[in-house]
Image: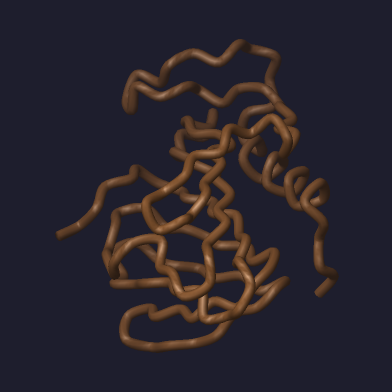
Length: 155
């Protein structure tokens, strides 16, 4: 698998997020989720994404969130995670998500099974599955998250 640069990865994520909504309509709130309707194509230059720092040194850059014209809720963000850190404790949620690993070495625990994922790797977490993630490398890890479905943590 070819390692994508940030520009290529951004284009892939943008295309995936807008597949169902390629009309020329303006974004309007969805009646069911009160989120923007993603009804037209968009470009998200990395340098224009707003960085948000977390207490563990993690930096997250939201890309988009909203409902596709085909009714799926989508949220995309980019995360940089320092060595030895977890983005959050193990948890479950109602949405499914894909993590596209750009840099670093991540240990993934998904429903009791553990594995290592490195650049170019992809993680899929199904709805309702207990999972966690930790940067076990010596350098920051960088990855994009594409979440599909309504986002609610399951206790």
